[in-house]
Structures are given as structure tokens and as C-alpha cells.
Length: 260
Image (tube, rainbow, N blue to C red; front, side):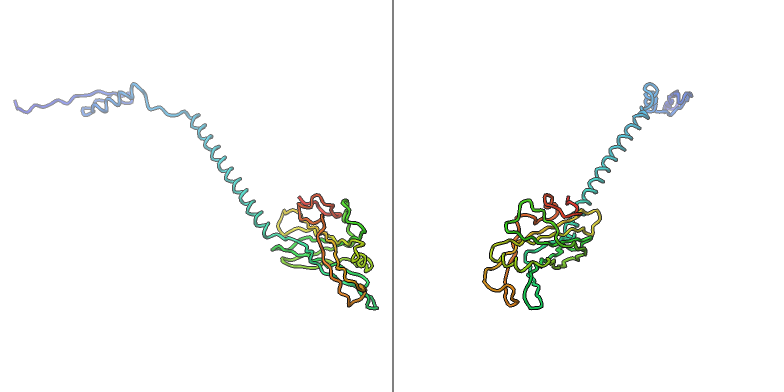
């Protein structure tokens, strides 16, 4: 006999998929794995209902995140739009640096004064649906607390471009009342308003009001003479000087929307 011993291959009989298989080269490791699967079953898989539930939860979470991001974006756009409108919108203001005009008859005598009050659009865009009025009130006493500031002249419509300025002129103030004001025997009040919208859509209505009292020097002379230079100035009243929401408690002209 040969000194070389032949080792017999160990025949292993296994069962694969219910069919008996005999494989001379089937390793012990493979046999061990096969036996483990045989006794413990296949690797467990999650139930379909659990997968569907987790999918639903994930979808809801994603939807909530997207909704929050959308709301944040909308709020940001709103803030940016309001900031833009606040610096670009029309902004009508009045100034107490008014001028005095006079009316002269055929005999070259001054018969009346007028107050010329500047009205300016300090904004960067034009006004829309602008309406304005200027009136005056003469009283031997100070302005009553319950004074309603009625319009005593026609309401004027127009448009005021960016940075444009015009003058609102009162009707004639009789020279006799001007003489009494110079003597501190009467008060002359000039007041008015401007209501308008700006060019931005869905913007609220705007309103500006003013009230000034005329103060004159006391230099004696003939006020009816065209050569007499009677200087005066306008001081703001204690009320009726406001803009937009500041005017909530003021008496509003007829047909004017109350500011928000």
C-alpha cells in the first residue's frame, strides 16, 4: 500500500428547499447557517401597516415644515412690502410758513387778506384721488374745544406728484377783521385737510389735517394802504394737526374715511 493515506470526503446530507441534497464539499459553516435558518425561520420583516404608518407620519412632518417655511416667507414678504411702501408712498404735509396775499379794489385800497398755506407731497410717488380743502374761522374768543372745523369753501380734487408743492388759498378775510386781529380783539384761524391714497394696491386711505392761528405785528398804520407792510406769522393750534391714525379722534370732513 502506498504510504499516502487518502482521506475520505465526508458526505453531508442537507435539505434545501424541501429537497434532499448530498454535497461532498458542503462546508460545516454553511451547514450551521442552514440549520439556524431551519430552526429559527427567515429574518423578520416589518409589518406593512407599520411601514404605512411611518410613511404617513413622515409626510405629515414634511408638510408641517413646508407650511411653516411658507408662512415665514409670506410674513417676510409682507414686512419687506410694508417697509418699501413706508419709504416710497405719497406723504402730504402742510407748513405754517404761510404767505399773506391781499385783494385790492379799484381805488388801490386793500379790502381783504388771504392765507396761502403750502401743501407738499414729501413722498417718492404720486398721490391718487387727492381731495383737499382750506377754510378760516373768525372768533372773538379762543377756538372752542368742541369746534367741528366745518368746510367753508369748496373741496378741490387733483394730484400731487413726488416732491411737488402747491399753495392752498383761503377765501378773502375782510380787512376789518384783520385790523381787529392786529388789535388783539379777535382771532383768525386757518385750517384744512388733504385726503388721498397712494399708488400701492390695498393701501389704506391717508389723511392730513392742519390748523393755524394768525398773529400780527402791532405797528400802527393804515392797513388798507398797499404801501403798508403788515407782517404776520402762523402758529399751530392746540388740536387738528395730525396725520393718518393720529386723526382718529378728530372731527372728520363729510365723506372722508376715518384712518385705520
